[in-house]
Image: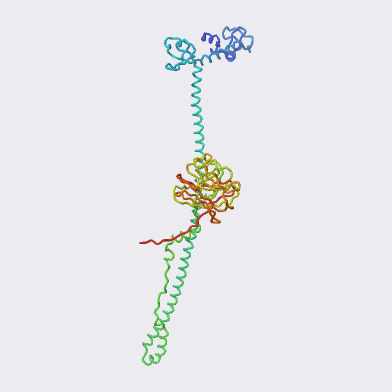
Length: 465
């Protein structure tokens, strides 16, 4: 029936299902485009089948045939989408749910082959499995989203690495330029001192040689004159003897000429411990800070100085969400952690709004709100407080603080704070530390909190042999 219907609804010219069919006066129908191509270039418009002349050059649409063709094509799509049983040509409506996990029709279900088999409607069975697959798909979609997010973070991190490298390289060059300038100036100073000494001693030797030359000339004249007197006749010799003796006695015959002491360049002064003396002098331009802040841990709203010793609050920066970065608190950590020994650093806290400083455990979850694992003193709502959750906070009875020293004794489990301006004790936490600790600073102020540099000194110690 399907084949016969398709034949009845096919155009006699193109043999495909009619498209925009038109009907001639002879009752034959054709595709509009097929009929126009058939008539093209012909003087008379005849029917392609019966050859009767058409009275109309633009025949009317065969609407009924058009509707039949559209219905047939739609039904064909539906028939093509329906799966049929290969044995009975019936729709597959059931699916085996245990041993026979295959689709079957209603005729198959009632056959002896499937007597012991259990079935479930395909739509219901498919719906159950769609739900299972949708759950798995949702997990995959979430995983894909996570991968895309991490990929985005990696892309951002890669770009940030380039920016960090360029910025760090520029700072390294600036620091070495300062060192180069210092060394060049020191070299110039020392070479100038050497040349000045050379000039002074060369002038001294020149004057000494000029003096010796004059003495040599005078002595030469005396020697020559005396030798002439010795060659004279006895009468003449005796007559001139007294004058000759006086002239000879005027020459300094007792003191012999000597090379002046200290005439050579004092190489020991210029070269002795040269590098040490330059290094010792360099301490005036070098500062040392006990704690250096790690920008990779800083909350995006914190801005660090180029030397990474001060921090202030500002506009949020576009930074990678790297694992080390603290997200929920305006906090930054030190670059080095402490697992033993004593450590001390000082911080300038000339701020009137919130700040906090102390230590924080390495194991805290930095992407979440940090509820415990830290010890600090802070300024909050105009009050100085000691905070170490889960222990209750303690209000500190201190006046306005300007500079604070933090002292950590990891082995003894003590963290102490002191007022540098009054040399007074502020507070001490006692705890048995087991985790690596990092110094931390928090700030909500646009004025910087700064870690103070330490005094650099050089000492020498004699080695005992």
